[in-house]
Each structure stands twice: as C-alpha cells, then as structure tokens.
Length: 499
Image 1 (cartoon, helix red, strand yellow):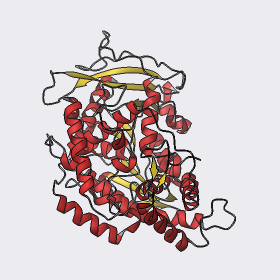
Image 2 (image 1 turned 180 degrees about the vertical axis):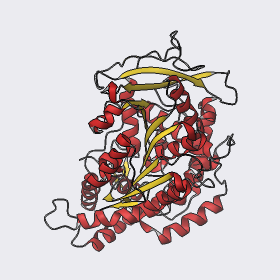
Image 3 (image 1 turned 90 degrees about the vertical axis):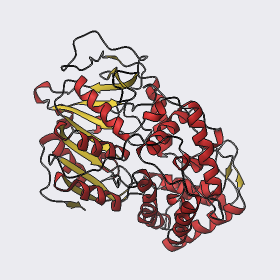
C-alpha cells in the first residue's frame, strides 16, 4: 500500500478529477418551463465519461455569485441525479452533501449512493453536486506554489522546535496568492452560500422539501441549511459531525484533531502490537506510541530523502500527517505501520501518487475560501504560539498543529456575513450518526452539534473506529438505524448507542 492512500484531501481531489470527465461543459439555463415558479429549469443530459452509472444525468444550475446582488454575475453549479428506482414509492430528493470543504458528490449517485438499501433508493432521487468554486462548477484557483500544496503545509504543522513563525509566513504567502489569483469568486465561497445554492437547486428540482445525507464538513452544511431553511427540510442525516461553535467554526474543526487522534491512536496501537500481524510495530500498545513519538522526533532532525513526494523528503511532520491520514480508516493502519518500519530502516516505499496539480490547486482554493470566509481568524502570532505550545505539551501526537495558524490568519478579505448559529428552532427531523472514535470529527465535537440542535435531533453513537459512519466505518446497528429513518422516518425515541 502507498502512504496516504485514503487521505481525505487526495480523495476529494481525485473525485473532482473524475467528475471533470463526467459532466458536459457548463451551459446556459434550458429553455424549458421551470419546475417551480421563478425557478431555473435544469437541462438534464447524459453524463459524459464511462465511470458513472448510465442512469446518472448531469446538468448545470445557475446561481448568483454574490447573493447580495442576486441579479449580478451568475456562476454554474454542476449537479447530477439518479432517479428513484420505484416511481410509486418515491418520496422526494436526497441530497448527498460532501465533506471537505473541497469535496464533491457529483459522482456519488453512481458511487456511494448505490450502497444505500433498495428501500432508500426507491424513496428518493439521489442528487449530487460540485460545490461553488469546485470544477466542473465555475472554478477558482489561487495559484499556490507547488510546495504549499503539500498536505504537511496545508495542515499547519509547526517547526520542529514548536515555532509558528514559518506557518505565519506560509499563511501570508498563500493569502497573497489567493488575493492575486482567486478573482471575485473566492470572496463568495462560504458555507452560508453553499446552503443557498442548495436551496436554489431544491427549487429547480421542483421540490417543496429535501432530505439530505451530509458527511463530515457536509454535516455543517446540512446544519446551516436546516437553520436557514427549516421548513424546507424533510429527513436529514448528519454523519461524522462537526462542532458548530459560531465563535470558532473552522478553528474548532482543526482543534478537534487533538482529541480525535487521542481517541483513535490507541486502536491503531493495539492493532500494531497484535501478535501475528504482518505489520506489527512493537510488542505492546504503549511501545507503539513511544516508538512513533521517537521516530517523529528523529525525523525532525534527520530527514530521509523521498524522491517524487511533496515535499521530497520524509520529515517528522510528514510522518505525523501520514498518521493523521491513516487513522481515518482502520483499513489504512498498514500505511502508517509500514512507513514507520521502513523509516526506521532508512528505506522508503515509492512516493504516493498525487492527483493532477490543477485539481489540487482547485481543491485547496475552495477549502481556503470556505474556511476563511466563514469566520475571521486571529492574526496574532503570539496567540497561535501560545496555543501551539500548550497543545504540544498536552497532545504530543499532534505536536501543536490543531491550534496553529492556517492561511486564514492572513486572509485578505473580511467575512461578509457572520457565522450561522445553529439552534433548536425548526422541525424535529434530524438524525446524527457518529462513530465513537473518529480522528477528524471526534465525538466531543459531535456532542456540541447535538446540543445545539436540541429537540430537533437524535444522535446514534456507534461503537466503531474511523471517519464516516453510515455504510462505511460504522456497524450494522448504526447502518440499520439510519436506513430505517431515511426509508420510513422512524427515529429512535432518544439518543442511543449502537454497540
């Protein structure tokens, strides 16, 4: 296996690259009658390419670039669908809301949508989309330096000595590039605007209400949609949930990795210490942890050349980033174990393949625009240094990264609107599903979303490890609970635990 096989950013970028071939070029609105009064008509066509289900159709939705000027410049949102498999059982449309920010669900009706049970596929048209800014929707690009596309740069790992000065320099360089190359669109990429785009899509589909399955960052999109348009929601599943703290928003998501790694690494350590495991790292879980920390510290001082990688070396932070990526899915534990064993011997496997640079540029720009436009980040180097120093002491595995400065610390634009505060006002039609051990969206953050939604929601906590619970890294009990809700509307009466 190659390192970072299931890295979420690489997966999102790869999916976006595939989606580029799945949709015809952006077109103007169709001339047919709109599906709802004042709504745009969608000109559905067969999707291009051979990687999608032949039933999947594609279209382009036109939306305002700036919702404060709804009659101004319009942009295209690439959308897709597979119709309900039983017209007599059809209930409505199920929006597949991707993670990220920077992820696409354009091919999800053909992909993970087909993992849904027949009762759900009968009940809904499955709807995918590429969020604003993400190709093949009208796209954005910051023109970042190649080195700044490295995951160990996009995640703000501090210097080996804990200094954040280099991170602040990187933030300024990336922000300047986005200001120079991002155009007007990058100012208008935000979660609030994505939710508005989805409501435009709802209207274009002629639906009075929509259902949704939002995953990871998509849970925040779903929660924001449900806050802005509560009466337009039907059955909402939020899977692997983000902390909605309106005072921090994306800063809380980054900070959550401290707890997420500590929740999940012990599972890896037990696996890596299991007798008979061909990827065994040490004799005990405690030794696995100690060995990882020693190796990362050694690589901080003595990097190993890694031709073809970005950066072209294995240093302590690249190892830590590989650790973070590998904990998303227990199937990827061997990636981290094998890299540790190889690095200790001074040899490395071939560098992991990367998507085309144009795709990485696009994904990075959409991510930066969303994270930085949703909320204003602090600009004080001293504040970040204080947080990183404290985090390094309390959570050595993540070495201070979760409290460090990203590009948003130097973002050149002011947030045009305040963050959305998620509340309990609205219909009680939300089901949260959450793995107990999730490196990216830890249970502690999910509980904050559950608290914010109050009477509107019920949460199913799943005794499982990994990111993405429903039909992926959860368990049969959790999957059955979510499927029943989507198919019938029946939720548990109270919060429940799926052992």
